[in-house]
Amino acid sequence: MVQPKVKPAHKPSFLPADFAERYRRWLLEKGLGGQQVHWWTVWVQRFRLFRQAESSPKPFQEALEAFLDHQRREFNAGPWQTDQARKAIL
Image (cartoon, rainbow, N blue to C red; front, top):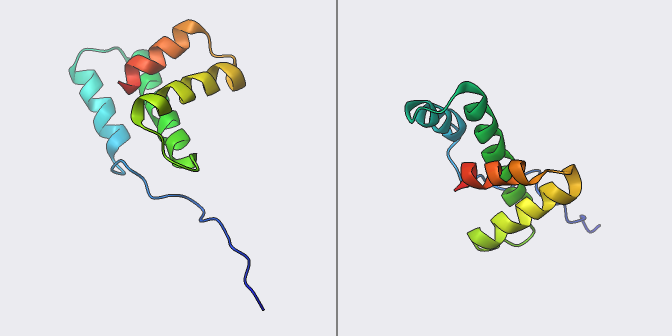
């Protein structure tokens, strides 16, 4: 009997497990406010998940543009939101 090929539940992470917390602390040290820290951390985590779901990894800049396009298309992200996401990720 041939076993079906099963896609792994998740791909290995390319960031350390504590990255979000370290990033959040770094933003606070840089003087960003609580809401901005929250949303920048959310954007980075969303981008991380988007990258993990890619079937074939793209170069960073290409992946960033694909992510921002995806946010516009699927979630109606406005220009200010995609600008915020770009800044958070970069």
